[in-house]
Image (tube, rainbow, N blue to C red; front, side):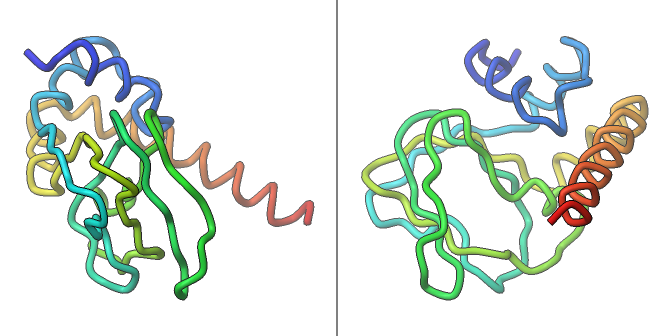
Amino acid sequence: MASDRKLEHLAKVKMFSTLNRRELARVGKAADEVTVKDGTEIVTQGSTGHEFYMMLAGKATVRRQGRKVAEVGPGDYFGEMALLDRGPRSATVVADGDATLVVIGQREFLGVLDEVPEVARKLLVSMAARLREADSKAVSH
């Protein structure tokens, strides 16, 4: 079974927040824990996305067009859209010091959806809520 630490962090991901413990454990089984060294380019803006990442330990800098736009640390995540499509990465993320991440590949994630179709339905509801929230922010600005 996936580690409790991994599941605890996955449960905080908005996309996975509606999953029950069993469903979350199945997603956790599809995930790997990896450590990267300082300066590692985790994802590159414009490249095709294949994985979702969540920081367990360490920090990373997010850059768009070479400009720093954010920092990510433990509990933060990026690349969730790559689980659903293979669109281009919207930013480059580089490790600031050694970092430990949870990684879920698209192929493994799609396997979870095939095995547990209820997860797909819950993800659609979650993604619809996220789109509504983004739309509401766009209209109010």
